[in-house]
Image 1 (tube, one colour):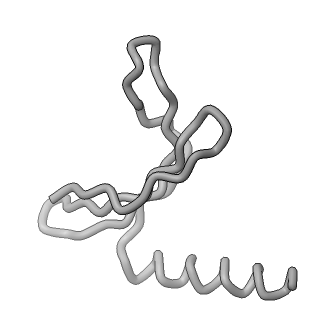
Image 2 (image 1 turned 90 degrees about the vertical axis):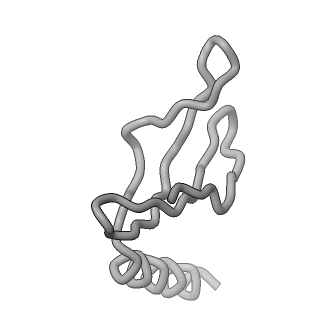
Image 3 (image 1 turned 30 degrees about the vertical axis):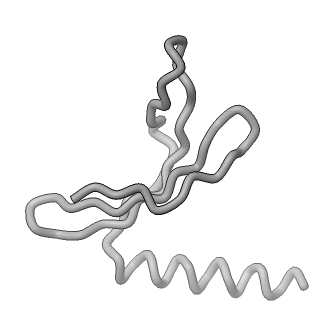
Length: 70
């Protein structure tokens, strides 16, 4: 299974949130993509791919950080 959940524009790049599976384990990925010379989106090495339980902790930490900015 590989599914794009959301693409977010970031200047000329794209932040892509994906669901994937590898060896029976599910993952949530957040990766930066760039457009190549042919107009195709290609992944960079910049990003995270984590099991859902760890991604929940990352989400909670981001929400906490955003709460402190308000």
